[in-house]
Image (cartoon, rainbow, N blue to C red):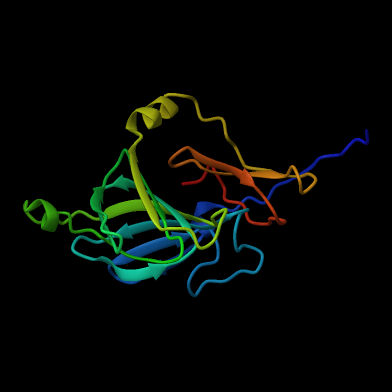
Length: 208
């Protein structure tokens, strides 16, 4: 059996150097090319196409818009985010709750910082801070889907462990066994996934 030499390659991208979008009601930081921001050397990380760090003012948010063939994972760091979609799902996402929406063959949804309109409580002025990832699905054209899961106990267990991650490296190994890891220090969250094509984008895991 032949021996494969593994050569680690590291591309550290500091959080302060991320693309930034500001629209008054929204402050967004993009780990990869997004919207009007484009860098041909930083378009994705494996199957991870989007990693956005968003802060949305109270009473505002993303109006109803479409998605297709994308797995979208959202978790709130502070505040609350109201989700509504064309499949009938509606709810409030808050810290400790992870949300997954499968766009499949097509879905419409909105994301707003206006939870008082559902609860009937007093209007608040606090912004919502959340992180959202878009991942390419295994199979295109599937049925849209939605799931949310309480993960607070799991997060607390992770947060009690020392954080030793200094950076993230991609190992260039044969395509049939290549795997890639993407991590963020803010949430100590990692995705490990098959990588079907070369990757150049990395996100500095120790910066804030």
